[in-house]
Length: 171
Image (cartoon, rainbow, N blue to C red):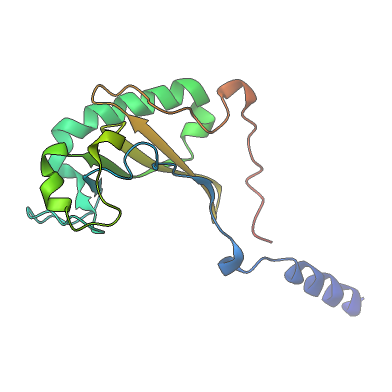
């Protein structure tokens, strides 16, 4: 009997996936919207300095809250309408890129080079959908200066959404 339990334990343990082998799914897909643009990225808990870094460091979103929060709200209302509450409650805001065409000179040394002709959106929102722990799906939403969505939603609508069993784990 003890041997049976030991074999069962080892068998269930051997079916676990190493965390380092798990990768996120989805695609932010900002390439056609803001990738070649002079952008600053904002997030909750970002750098609070008033001197904005042009590469890498996210800036605290509260520095632009008056301009971005109404757009963020419009984007999230559109997501909620399309995908429904069950999907939306597992969605986490990561950050937002904002295009600043008047700052193109500050980005002159950046690679890839900025090209204002390729800027199709004013805002690009980064979200992560996490139905279970350690499983993420990247979602990117492009929006114009009025909060109108510029790309298609790459996730199921409410009618086609199927709840994922929350008892699933990496094992």
